[in-house]
Length: 329
Ligand SMILES: Nc1ncnc2c1ncn2[C@@H]1O[C@H](COP(=O)(O)OP(=O)(O)OP(=O)(O)O)[C@@H](O)[C@H]1O
Ligand SMILES: [Mg+2]
Image (cartoon, rainbow, N blue to C red; front, top):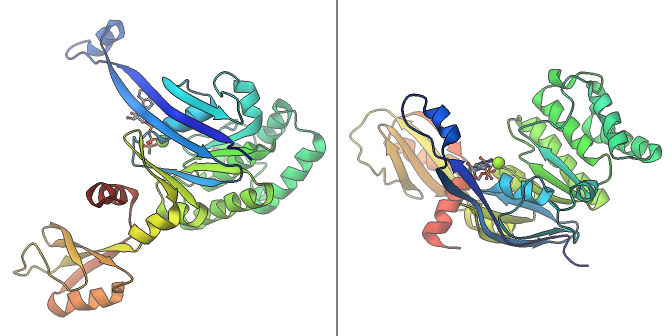
């Protein structure tokens, strides 16, 4: 079978009105003809096979949401091609909407003042979901997402985790083949994140739904995705297995220690770790957890210095990207 999503040389630029300085600057900007151009997505290409679970990853402002908006047909590209099951999303928005589900973690698609159940019923009518299919899907989503405990509550009163669960159910009521998730775990606690991850994996497994998700959480990627597309400044810098990136960078941890004042220099010179940063009495020590465990490293540091406080940091997207630039893949 061919690709379900095909993107070639995709570009999006935004015209931004230049702000005028001084009194009434904002007002004068309204009449200004001066614009600057922001290239948000620059020559992005990828193709996605049916049933894939792909992480679309990058730092703030990388162009992730802009890409998703072009895939869903909300935005018209400035150049290049997008095809979703061979149709062009922005030309056939309604047809495209039937085959996709979308969740923007930052903003609900549900009716704010209505109980969640009424939003589901409205969506059933909008998408003309047959009653049996609606009943079957609702039963399954209630089971997987525990919707019953809050389904009668107005959306505005839901916790963020509950709202996200409701949004996921809403996006899937019409049995779309593709699910776009833009930061579906943003702001959630560990338990709520885990629930969402399990649900995404289950939906992919039992219905073969193709999933593209953006996230800043490395755990989301490791636990959900097999493939990741890394973008930075609008351009793809990696497209391949998550395992390869994880193998290469996922074992790095950083021990952050606050030490009692002492005559130390900029480099703590602890065996098994590299001092990557210092601010006053706080040091960042990078280590590979296959080479040394966090507790071994802490023991080594405390043999020579008095530790006041410490934390162990997981690798972050930003760190991984800067290391890809420094060291290559
Ligand atoms: N409507 C718009 N008008 C002008 N500039 C925009 C618009 N939407 C996005 N941009 C700019 O395009 C760039 C990419 O934005 P985008 O929202 O796609 O980033 P992102 O990867 O989703 O970031 P984040 O992780 O913060 O959500 C940013 O520099 C942003 O300021
Ligand atoms: Mg975004």
